[in-house]
Amino acid sequence: MTTETTIDTAHWENRLTELAKKHGVPGAQLGILRVGRDGAEDELFTTATGVLHVGTGQPATTDSVWQIGSISKVWTATVVMQLVDVGSFTLDTPVKEILEDLELRDPDVTQKVTVRHLLTHTSGIDGDVFTDTGRGDDVLEKYVARLGEAAQNHPLGATWSYCNSGYVLLGRVIEAVTGKTWDQAMKERLFTPLGLTHTGTLPEEAMVFAHAMGHLGSGEELTVAPVWGLPRSCGPAGLITATATDVLAFARMHMNGGRAKDGAQVLSADSVAAMAAYQVECPEKDLLGDSWGLGWFRCDWNGVRAIGHDGNTIGQAAFLRLVPEAGIAVSLNTNVGSAIPLFQDLYEEIFAELADVRLPDRFEVPDEAPAADITPFLGEYARESVLQEILVLDGKPVMRTTVSGPVAELEGASEPEVHELVPVGEAIFAVKPDKSAAYYPVRFYTLPTGEEYIHFGARATPKKA
Image (cartoon, rainbow, N blue to C red; front, side, top):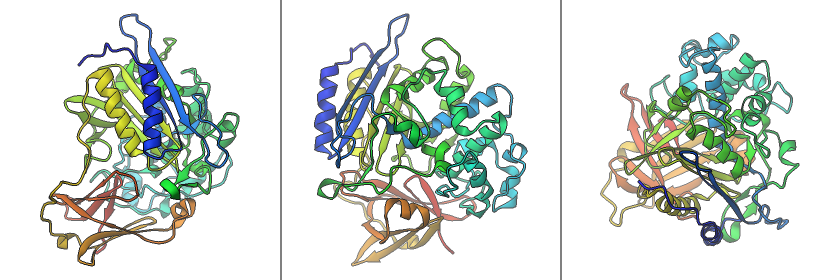
């Protein structure tokens, strides 16, 4: 792998603009970092294109802030690992020992769920609980007090399923140990030591900068999102706003043994390594990564190990990838939900040019779809706020998804969405849930204990009896 090519700033400015237009992305901000080795200076390049809001036409700039969504989870995980470093608890400490009033729906899970389960999305607690508990400093305390209402979607540690709720719970762990709100703890323990100037967790902190507004739909049906952000209670799972420059300062710390650019040790080198190391396998390996660490997901890019995270809020999508071996990180912030094709085109070109790394082939439907029997998978699969029905309509297998509750209210969803299931392989199908060019994997699988599941959108959803 070579990493000697200088960043061609004019080229990447043009490519961002060209590809954003091609894929109908209203606005985007791109940052590329190469960490200097052997005393050399870092190379850092940022650019922006388009507008922050199609209604106002305000131009996107390199110092405007964007919602980085669930990339925030890696930041929350970093502060959790700082607390592990100082001995506040261990990865295998039961959360109940830290939050004595914790009461989940399953009493056994209440006693046994650990910090590691939460970091690795293996707790089984329903992940998409977006309870709005107000705007006060006690939002996480109130959220956790109501977490006992959430379903237990799979047995503790039995499989991997993306869990926002678990990261809100980790935010409450941070609060209990530090005596600070999650917002304060993030500033004091991470934002300030890293020297970040355009990063915050609250809307009023974003408002002092030019800030992106989310957009839903695509093409001529593109509309401004009905609300700017998620409730404050979702903070630890996805409410950080930042610039690509600040995101890359965070990434640099993770590629530099836990040290900030000024040399301050923000996180121990052991914890940096642990966060990127293998913890659990992902049931399907095409949407995000093949496995998960402690906060990061892990990607096998044709023999080169990359780590990263994506973030989706209401009409905004962000992408962060690091190749630590090459010392290269790339951050992309966008203000539309369907930005995956832009991300794919850009990152394939950038990492090929700067690190001689080839990304995996994209998840696509084969030219000739294999024969596949949908019959074993027919039925209803359900979790909090989501019903997925696998059925045959007009002779074709389809997935009909009905979203309800807070998620539907935030995104303005009401009617069920029906999408054809295209066979890809054994127990693997593809759907195209929006009008972008991207297909998404749908995998059916069975736990060793016999329970049947569908895995879609990084969530494991159990089949109803």
